[in-house]
Image (spheres, protein in one colour):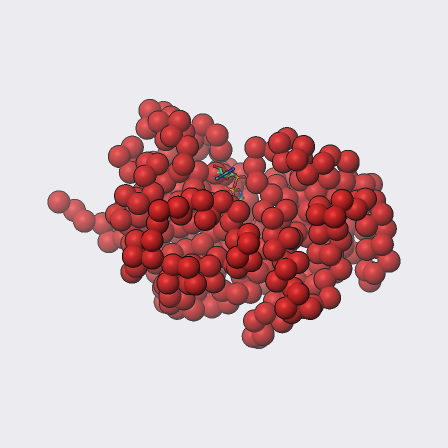
Length: 335
Ligand SMILES: NC(=O)C1=CN([C@@H]2O[C@H](COP(=O)(O)OP(=O)(O)OC[C@H]3O[C@@H](n4cnc5c(N)ncnc54)[C@H](O)[C@@H]3O)[C@@H](O)[C@H]2O)C=CC1
Ligand SMILES: O=C(CO)COP(=O)(O)O
């Protein structure tokens, strides 16, 4: 019987997991794909109809039915690569019952753009400290890429970061395809924190739009956002990086301007007067930046970086401050 060279388990059932299943399937290298999601109804639907009923439902799923399951332990056991797509706020819950021994020897790729609440750790730190995953086995996948455009096969660029760039290149070989190009990086901290922060700036961008600011102001907001992002990642992990690269500036731009952005949509609703609860209920999707801004507020107590945009978003979402007034104060600080 043929044994594929690599076995990759996609973990999560949302838009990005579905897009990543498609990307992997459309890459023709020898590998076997497995898929875990918590929703048993969705698994049954995929078994019968080969489409995810809840997210990117137009995408035809090319993974064999026997490889799609709600049993996380069994899926992990069969794979050598795990590709994580569960929003950070639900990662601990998803990993209930999973032990460090279950992850021993696995190569783990985080496609998550968030911070684990309470722990206030980015995914690499969380897996390292709670599951003994060595950084040499950890990869991050990020960059400006909306799941909705993957479904449409629009050309996109993704950055794959790892301390072991040969490992990043190996994974890239299984990931790139006719509409996905990959870029290799060794900056896991900058890539992870950059993705976390851009979600918060997308919320700020949406709030501004919601309260009535125009494109002129948004351009100033985003040019301040990239400088704020640069200050923070330089404080956390000071290496020589070019913040204009796609994984940092590119991701910030797509999320701040795209019609597909979850975080911008959420921010826009907040700017228009929705409460956090009602905005979340209105969306079937998760705005990571909502959880991240609270975690970042805690993390930054250590670094004390000047972050007026994150501070304004935190005040609006967690201290019930008026979006219009906070943005008016923020506008006085921008340059
Ligand atoms: N959607 C995109 O274009 C991209 C998303 N990402 C990242 O991928 C990760 C997953 O996001 P998406 O797939 O976009 O999410 P989504 O908003 O499309 O789907 C939500 C996901 O969260 C799960 N979920 C919702 N409530 C839950 C709960 N109470 N407990 C456990 N799970 C729950 C759902 O089952 C679903 O899998 C996030 O970190 C996001 O930042 C990264 C790049 C692109
Ligand atoms: O990270 C993403 C695209 O690169 C998706 O997040 P948003 O949907 O909030 O833009």
